[in-house]
Length: 185
Image (cartoon, rainbow, N blue to C red; front, side):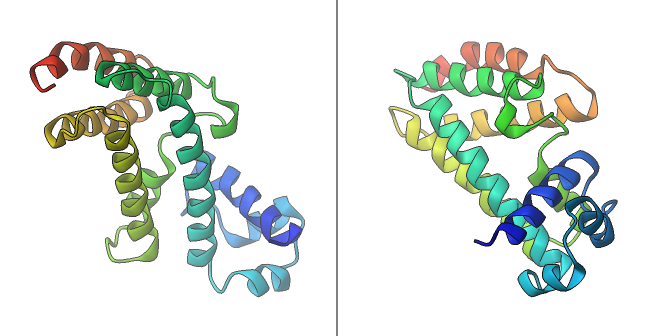
């Protein structure tokens, strides 16, 4: 990957995460990055192509981070604790590699896109499925009902932390799951 291409992705990732994909135009990405428009279009055929590249980068960062956080879990309740402790760290800006919390870039981008068939929405769906698969992989007993419960609570906590500025949503979700999960395990 060229340095200019990566600079464009990193700049757009920062801007899109903070302000959203619709409020940030190509000219702002160019201005902040210092890259020429011709160079941008050499690497990306459209703004949508840049957004997808940004989502791919964020996906890799997020999956790597989450894998590291889930790996030490010794049992299914440990996976729940690890996941929601990790989310609490993210919501409260204690995860430098994810930058300041502005909600989930995948949720936000899919909503802003508004078309479930566009590349952006399809990639957001791919990411959410990959996170679900990762959580399921770390559970010690295959259990679709438990994965459903965990993922629905995770998504609700993310939205609550962003929309309601409820930075304690992950820990409350963790506590609820600790009470509910044993009946599913």
